[in-house]
Image (cartoon, rainbow, N blue to C red; front, side, top):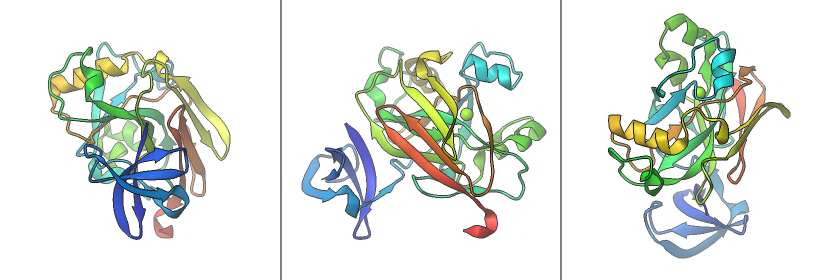
Length: 254
Ligand code: MG
């Protein structure tokens, strides 16, 4: 099943995608029942699929990416937070900050939380997952190196493109993820290569903080990160989910 947020006649709704081109509208959010209203996808605008209170990001979760950054493979998950104000949806512009000299893409598989989640085991984690989506952990790489910690580098407005759909019923142990920059494949891997698999991450993070419905865990990026420039088009594809496409814009061009 694919969940989405969309606008239709200037109203924002939650829905389920049927047959790839029809949206079945929900009565309320994803926890509500489906209504009787259906809309052709072509008459709707797809919005970012959830409104997280926080995005919990995992750093260095693929061995080859840790090596390319010349960083040690961690013994337990390395966590950082991206603010709720950094999210954008499919088709929205990533803004290249004037403060930044190297803007990198990072393709990731993201997990969307279904219900309040606190101190769960790896075995219980699946009950708390609504589904999976595409995420681009946009990073000001020069500022990440300069600051020594990651808050500024990861937190600019527009640095968390997410979407287009939240897909349920997928196997989190083998989700392929690919990134294309201006049509060229730059990253290609699968969650089978994660150092810490998805159920372990949900469990680990839930020992630290309460996860709320709509919160996002983004699971780390594979080998092949690199720079984006103004005017570039960047696409993240997760098999079974779809493709998240965004263009990069200058601060003065929006
Ligand atoms: Mg990342």
